[in-house]
Amino acid sequence: MAVSAGSQRVAVGGAEEKAVVAATAFVADTVAQSRVSADLFGMTLGKANVRDGSIDTALAITDWPRDLDLLIVDLADTADTVADAAALKTTVPGGCVVIGIGRINDVALYRDLMAVGFNDYLATPLGEGVVARAAERALDLRERGAATMAGAGLKDAKPRTLSVIGARGGVGATTVAITVAGMLGVRLKEEVLLVDFDLHYGSLMLALDLEAIDALREALDQPDRIDALFIQQVAQKKNDHLYAIGAEEAPTGGFQARPHAASDFLRSVHRRFRWIVADVPRGDPVIQRQVIEASSDILLITDLSLPGVRDAMRLQQLVHDVAPSARLHLATSGVIDARRSAVKIADVERTLKRKIDCQIPADTLAALAAVNFGKPLAEAAPNSGIVKALRPLVSRLDDSNEVSGDGGPKKTTGVLGRFSQGFKRRKK
Image (cartoon, rainbow, N blue to C red):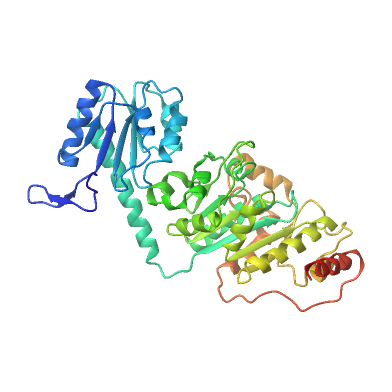
């Protein structure tokens, strides 16, 4: 097994010690193979494992050394370059830097490879020192990312996860999640991560004009592979304070989250981000329950309709069952005007037995403007009624001394009362 960078260091010319890199390369072209060997000689003390082969050779390996620092693979002659590259990234150790080389000099290919987790791509013929410089640059980024995470861990601040859940479709949960995350980042002057847990039909990345990639599914499947480099590659930066992760899995993918996948994922990502805002799907009860269970705060949004209040009551009970210590915030939203709805705010409060924390008005024009600009609503339309309504909620979110807004039992009447009473009887 190759020697890891952390376990062996040598002094170079009496100067600062230099880490020895554990490296493997599979290169089919003989000229490129010689260049790779020459460039890696100094970095590995001549112990680089440079072999004749390609990405197909690498894909055939099932047991990689856990201390592998650097892998270089020849992408020439592969039938599906990006798909093979994505498959390879799921097998190598999480901290391993992967660099591809090939004959195609194309920016689109480079971007696709970066999106699936490669650290660099070099087109042949390779100039002298090109491979060494690319490897050193990628390894340096990895070390800086690790240092950032270590520094973040020194902060005496409790990690917080806010889950935003819509009781019904169309209540604007995704818009609210983006808006709250953006406002939190600006208010706290720290980086906030948005995660769209709807792997198949999520629209968060589209709304922010960011690229959705399949790394979220891989991270949920293997959260132990999440490290500083992984987060640096998949958490896409929208502005100084806002990052986002999302996926666009095919509906036929059939991904089934394993037990505790979401909580393990959030725990790993919290080493880099103190605040995470999760857009929680309604159509995946497994992921939904896992994210709620791992949350410190939950924002439940309902519209002013009988089905909306019924489903809000169900979700409220779920929160009480699986995350009793989480702070629950209730909001009303949607296209139904409170003044014209048969269901009034007072009816909702009596049914849910607590006050509504936030009444979010409909502002279609501002929401469309935010999507068109690919920006958070507070940035695209700072005077929107939605932004104004959310400001008090955002200001309370980071207040650890906030008391619960639950009220005492109140008498319920009418259809909403029967909903509540029937729900209680079923629970018994």
